[in-house]
Length: 101
Image 1 (cartoon, rainbow, N blue to C red):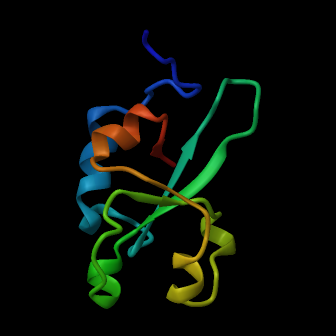
Image 2: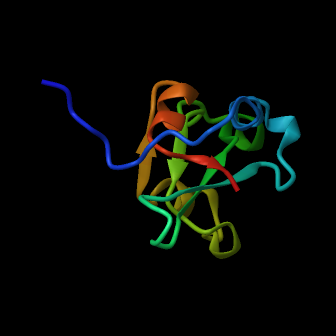
């Protein structure tokens, strides 16, 4: 039995390349992302964070922190305590509906 996900993949190749290439991020070390359940609901907001470049921490490459870019916590420690969606690959992240905002 297959399970359907509430979010459909909307990401393009450009989204994936941007997610995988932090030097392309305009708000480095953050990349704002959104996903929508449908066209009628407001988007869910999140950010990718390049923790390795910012502070040397690893393990967050494909982690979407469920925060608004304009309401980020004041410290990295606070950001890392925020709710998040963790993926093994950017393809999984895209399949869960996340796109570059």
